[in-house]
Image (tube, helix red, strand yellow):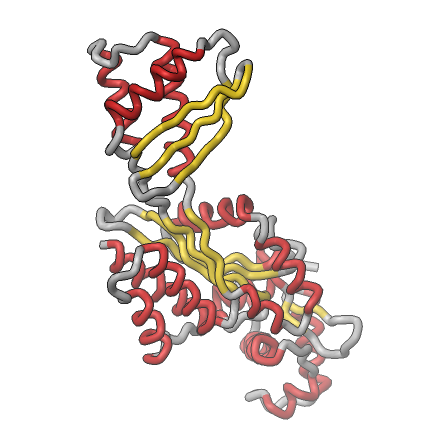
Length: 347
């Protein structure tokens, strides 16, 4: 068998291209294997079923088609879908109704950014009939108050209260010789000198004051403050993942794969890594089946596009996740439009 990744559309004859395209179009519409008799009746080529079977056999040997054991028909392989998407698909622009549905949520006034992103993602999910996901930039926390509570030798509970009323806590590892007064001093310094600042600004002020000896902290206490702020700052760099429309996946004819995909979606860390890959490409990406480690089991596809902030830098990713039997020609431009609309929202 020839590696399908080494095959280009130009290497296929006109007859093979037409039959392959007809099989893919039919499969993406119905999800059912396509037989030679069906193509002989509905295809544009006036060929006998026997002639079509010969071409289908050639396409199978190239790795572009496969024959499920329960049917005499053929379905495109993941490699075949990749060839179709990259070389044969004719994408359609989003309809006026689809544009209006996305615009209605993205243009919602008076709502928080996270709420707008959630609603826009839900709209995309409903239109594409897939799960939809957006990686949103986490808003910068503004410090209101820090409390440090000793938990015993080598540990303390750090409780950070944000200006918006949010509360985050974590257990910090401490050098075993840290005296209780060092925790109290670090807490008092943060509340007196850093309250009202973002985490990034707080780190910058601490560094500046240490350089000029205005922090009035010894090296040990300053290290406690710096370590705590740095850990929260790194958390803030991780995006918020919003996933909507998982129920659409249960409409799939293959419930076993749908359940596998739902389980895979629970692995948010893996999903974040996949979206980071789309983000680094700075353009729309299509991942089909085993091309992604996370979705290899369920054989699913991901279509994801980055969106940008006011300065033109990529700040997030929006996309859909569903079975490989997606209407790529319709969904790809829909995802692209949503990403562009989010970029305008952020501008």
